[in-house]
Length: 441
Picture (spheres, rainbow, N blue to C red):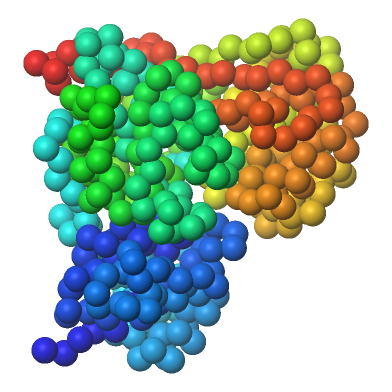
């Protein structure tokens, strides 16, 4: 049997999952390398032998995606497998052309090859883009199920940016667990809203082990909720698939990989943020759902915003800090903090660029679409320091924190702050309570 040499093109998430579920013990393939994009400081490491299995006693090297054509030639690669998410189709096919030009085949693995099967009922919450409001949808579903007396355990899309061995299986039950696992801001933003409400969250690298641990959680588990990331499809086969769409980016649901997969496989399609998006854009998204997945149930919802200290916004010069990934590879220009500033009539939104420090200078250079808001970048200690310095350098009256976590817990801000909270409220179509009532049976 001829063994095929493979490179997995990823971003420290789906790539590792595809390896674990499809390639790890498969003697027909030899994974010679991972490449990494999107996430700083991932390349230059190795996928450790403890996770890679008996076929890879030295582990697997991780390179920058920029080296991909040379790697294909150097390793005599037969196939390159694309394995990350929230990517415009043009960019996916550009990478495909790069791979083909170097002589290798280009491959995408689908749900049948990568989804795990759970012994518990599973609800998946996915999205067509980063920053659609998936996390608030997950929280609403969990709260509804808990009101029915069910123990819900969330399994979160991976964000293993540190020690991969240490992050093989992670359980988050309290805010202290976030510190124990040395979470980045990006990880905290996803885990903290769950644990603050008393929910258990699992994440990490090896999702077969993660799923088994979640199913057997010591606090009990009646339902697994897959809390997806970016616009990836679920790692676990769902019994009820929910997909969230964003009318602030109409048409993106048909233009990004693998968001359209999430749309086409949805049982329930939620158009979020209808309270702040143009009506025409809402209609565009709704029509695209009906044409692409006519059998899905459509819900329109608003992202209801509350503010801790509205007096710190009204009439004030404010610096707005928004969720980092939503602004960067999610390509949004605004977030919840911007909506709050407009509704509460801030005097001025202060441009953070003149005050940007260190790595944030590169962030603004790379993502030039970002409006007058500051992305909460925090993949490592240096980015956290740069974020703190940028905020404290800014000439403003107050800081609006539009991130899912309280930034003042992880960095020292020397200005008055106010947090913006956002929750999902259905405004048309069936309610989630009705849908989940039918699911529970």
